[in-house]
Image (cartoon, rainbow, N blue to C red; front, side):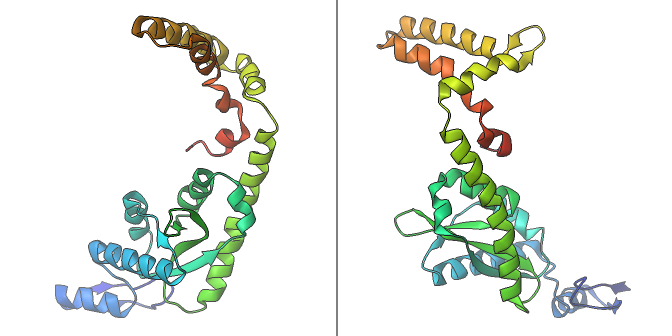
Length: 225
């Protein structure tokens, strides 16, 4: 019987005599076969790397699970981005890091997002500085887009965005998104009256504008939001 190790760090077929040999041989050739062990290794490394940078990595079980199945021999590293991007809401930054790049965002002890992240490469620490620089460059492009769209959207009011809802079809038998917003407005007023809520004008305005963000660049670019 034969098996193969890490696709970059191992070469050729590896003879296997028993199941014990299988685990040992793969480990020697840079494949951690046990997924639970890989997951544990990743989280331990992520915490250590974030801690060494003076922060704490975001706990995200779904991300951890995904990364564990993306790498065979995990090595965590710390990367940074310009603090100027912190002008963008943290939810947008973490979406870029998690959904697009599979990075772990890092926070300080007060729970504020730091201009850094923890990534996990599939391999050893060989040329890790080069790997870090490449990942920082990719994230920079993502964050540049986020900053641009945030600035563009900040120039528009919710009323301006809401006015564009009439150009988007919700359903051929139910009209546009603007029609849907009007129905929500009527429904909100009815519920408010039935439950005795005060300030109906604010309730009415909230219902009318609740779909406005669908016309923003941010939601178009980051639908996960």
